Image 1 (tube, one colour):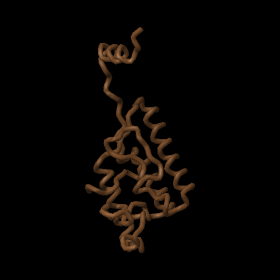
Image 2 (image 1 turned 180 degrees about the horizontal axis):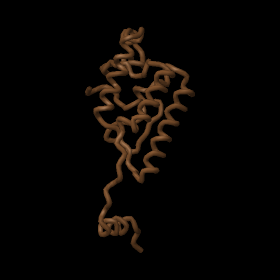
Image 3 (image 1 turned 90 degrees about the horizontal axis):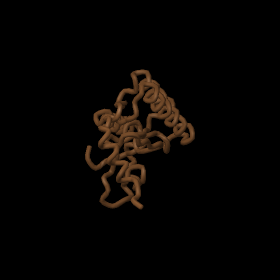
Length: 154
């Protein structure tokens, strides 16, 4: 999967906990009504954050496997449409307009309705593909050391 953009649901990258992107690669925004898909994504992320808060957890991160499977799905959906020819169009959709850049179809071409169904399924399945955890508790001595470094000396 190296060299191509990757996200889970167009919203989060693995190894970047609590960083959400709306309308990222693998999301449907540029191929659908961007306002509608942005609202879908914001509603989903809001529900995910509320779920974390209600369970006393503070760290949300996507699973790298879910991310890879989603990007494979994005590519498969594009291959089932006329977008499979986009690589020949010198288009920013694929990155082919940038010399030397790996050519890959980036947006999700499944449509607004299908994307909404996927988000509903992921939510119903306990936010499948996301890990919601409690951050490790730092020992009190480490917290004090961190505070001392942050406090300016007179």
